[in-house]
Image 1 (cartoon, rainbow, N blue to C red):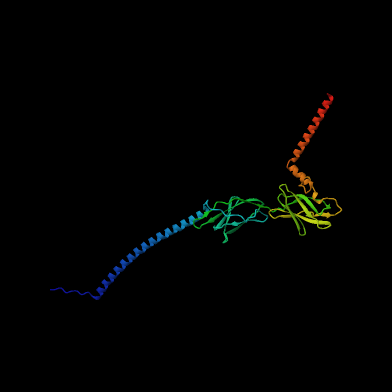
Image 2: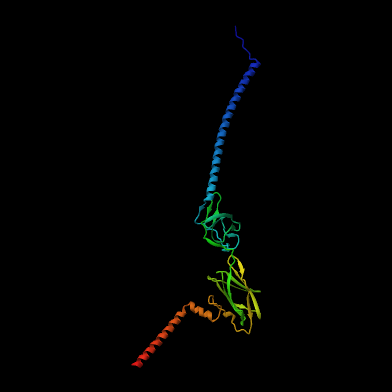
Length: 312
């Protein structure tokens, strides 16, 4: 007997189709899982490499920022606008730094700060100073971002911080004169500027290294009393007026030459004594003394010879 073919029922066919679909889905899911794992691994590697590169960049930036390379061929900025003396609370460092982005400022050989350079190539840095005294300044130029390069340090500049006003300790002049000009001499802080003023008439002179000064040919515009103020001013800008006014009486009846005032401890004001002092400075007095000694020797020798002849 021939066997009858079994026809698959719709239910059986559906089950087969379902199993087939499930198998395909599972294969796709496995592949997707494998692909995702690979992508994640590759992505993680790139992220780690990126972080390492960023970290290295930051490390290099910080390291280079702290210890930038010095290019000896570069010219350092100037401090041309920096005052050599100040009486303020700060030292103001100013100058030109063309072609540089920043200027490094050194005080007594220690870095105290950086400042950006303006578009005009100028820079300005303020450093607060507590104590008076002398300070050594230097600057260097810096350029570059990731790789910073600096110039060598500039030549040092000594800045004096002085908040003490100079003193005038001594003033000499004739109280009454018969000339229409006079002179004063005195002592003050060495290097200070002595300013004598009456109205629009102003006279200035700098005290020498020993603090001595002379002002000559001061005009006496009025008969009678002429009063002047006298002030000392130092390089830092400190000023102090002398405790007394300079008061001179101009009288045509007086025989005193106002320009011939002299104190043996001070420079000569004017006149013949000035010439005498120049002779002393040139040591011509030694030559004069030598001539006098020679004349005395010749004279005494002649006297001795004459006496001997008479005795003979």
